[in-house]
Length: 335
Length: 294
Image 1: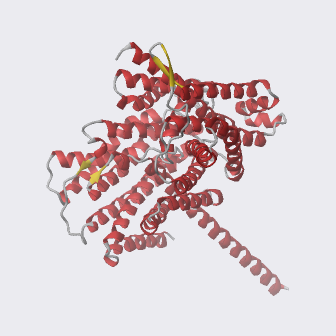
Image 2: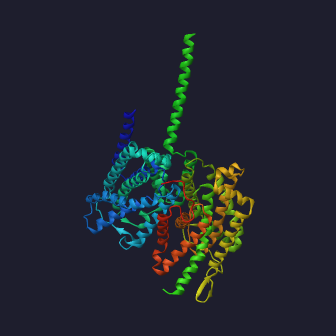
Image 3: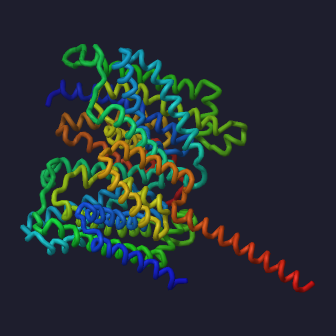
């Protein structure tokens, strides 16, 4: 069983890895890069919010921090544009963790409904700071060192780095899920008071989880900044990003390993294609909104869980029929 | 900086703040009674503003007369949203799901508004919009004064309804404890639906004043909802008085900071005030102490 499951994961990685080899059109591979970044973010978000039930709507604080870290360091150290800049990606992730620690410390002291709202407020503090401080370049943003890779080749390194992030966070998330720490997060989701009563250091666990989940989102932000070459506060500190990431995880299946990955893959890729093919943002909003309502109303636990339940049910039904038949034939032969 | 500037900032804070207080009261009423966080409140304010705009452009109906149409319309919009989506949410994840559902609803409305009215900024017009009268050296804009009066009238009628009517008793009972309210024979579901309607209906007045004092388009709603959420958290979620006080307080602080330091920092001061308050009082100014020990 475990073998089969691992095979599926390998197949998934192989398909994603083969994608830029088969599809070489730069506009398609650039959709691939963005989609992979969202997959990494959704999965990382899920590692804290999905497991603990504390819905954070301020992820772009980490994304933006990663992006600005990449931009500021590469600009001020006059870095030679090129692959060496990828070394700054983990630095962006670490900076996001540095921000996440006090952020989590403030926001995780309250009940979970209030937590949602505080994450939104903290997000706006960061967006306004990025607009108002002078070192961020204000609304005109920052231009990173210009990378002169050929047009047809430009996306490919970013694609594989983003894929690396997805693989990294999937492994981390799976490890967390199986660990004692992961169980503590799940216990907090199910009943925080009881978890506390049983000796789980809930505050420490929550803050650790929150900070850990910032790392990959920060790295994704750093890759994004390097990929697009020019960042603006309203695009890296974007409220739509905050909610998209959460919706992707919900869409696929909150708290599951595959759910957020699939959710991000389906939603982000379709969003990018729709915007390109319709060139009408409003129609997209309506489609996206309706799709969401349908999923939330009819599959409240996400597509992955819904499909699994369905499969289990039909498997159980088949098993029941089989045992009935067995019983019937058994009865028949004995008579 | 002088005393006139300070005084007029204080006046602006009070007048504009009352309108925010009105919109936030709707939001906190919905949360208090139903445990629903209505992320669509921001876009509903904008929807209401566009309704006033459409009435004005197509039928030349005055903004204040238009309220007679927009308030009932927004009430119905609220009822429809509650019946179609919110009322169906159940279980322990209800609040979290409500955030997503109302966000999806707000995306739908945003898309529809963008298609109908385009994304260009508009502002509501009327002979009173740009006029003001002066007391001493402080100028009072007619529209701001009207907004203040409107907010005061609506908030007092809301208070009257809550504290002087049979229905108000049911609402307050549902605010205090839904299970017990249901046990003594209150139809909590019906109360919830009507509260959602009322919570949305106040956006009609709020949206009209907002639209006359600011230029707006559908994406303005993000800024609005974040302010409204900050206000209800600061006031203590579910506390009506808290929402009013925080609404006025927030805009007041913002305007004062704008005059004393720089307008650049005025909106940020909101969020910093929120963070500071929450560090000291995690349940907000007037929030009920949560059962959680941690």
